[in-house]
Every structure is written in C-alpha cells, then in structure tokens.
Image (cartoon, rainbow, N blue to C red):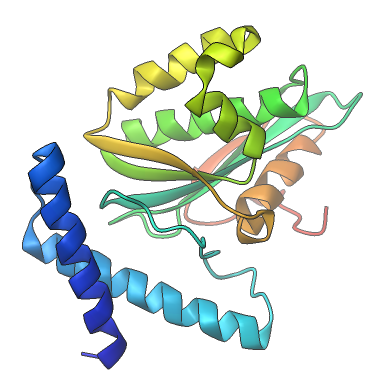
Length: 216
C-alpha cells in the first residue's frame, strides 16, 4: 500500500467514527478502506493534472471532501436564450457503474437556473433508479446551492425544491456540494452538446453518445 494512503485511511476512520456517534450510521470497514484508497488515488491524480494540464478524459476531482461515504455524481445544466432545448448532463463514479454518464435535452427552461435545478433533479432520479443510496451530488452553480440551503428565500422554485426534498428521502444519505466550474467540465460538455441537438435526445451509458461533440 502506498504511503499517502494511510493519511486518507485515518481520515475516513475518523469520519466513520463521527457518523456512528452523531448520526448512528454504520459503514462496513471494507467500504471505508476502499473509499479512502479511491480518494487517495484521485487526490494524487489531481496533483499530476496540475502539473500536466487538464485531461478532460479523466474524472474532474472536486476540491471539497464529502461528509458522507458513497459515490460522486457531477451535474450541470445548459441554457441559451432562444434555443429550442435546454441541456442536462451528469457524470458519475458508481461501484459497478464506473464512468456512467447521462445526457438529455428538454423543452427550453425559463432560465439558466431552471436548467441547473432540472439537471440536478434528473441526476437524483437516475441515481435512485440505479439503487445508489449514498451519493454526493456536485454542482458548479452557486445559486443552486443557496437555493437548496435556503429554500424559503426562493418561492418561485418551491415545486422544484419539494421534488429535491422528496428525492432525498430515497437515499440513505446524500448531500449537494459546490465545486469550481473547472472541475465540472465533463457534465458541462454533456449538457451543452445535448442542448445543441436538433431533435430530442436522451442517453445513459458508460460510452459517449454518437452525437456528442465536446467542442460545442
């Protein structure tokens, strides 16, 4: 085992202890070890990417550390005035579904913020349907984070926020965190490419759709 793994293992043992003491959440020690090793490897890759430049084929590594054990799901929405469609994209790291992606377009949303929250809701529905019950959802939309944390301040989005609240009951544990836009390039590319399609599209697979164009 690599030396840098030990710090991450100790960190996740401590977090597991806190989850047990304060939230009565149990986690298999083998899952704790696997999660710590995965996060350690992602951290090491992040250091390499800073020296070698961004590699868009790799998982973008968020700067925040989730407070729950589980899987990552990066989400993004794409909206442009007068376009027919809005785009939604997500990229996940799931046990048994590594590198699974989702992309679709829907009738144009009212605003960029509407497209962001619709993308998050779709991603949550997909994770629930895949029976992934411990998920950290990552978004680069700061307004969406404010909306989720202070729902009473956003009455115009009440129905969306009710959907999110309901969906969260489907998970054993979940959270929504904010990441820099530079760490969300894959979900962003998927959403923008779906938005630009001339016809309705929906895609969920480990492979990119034939219509995907990262340069869009």
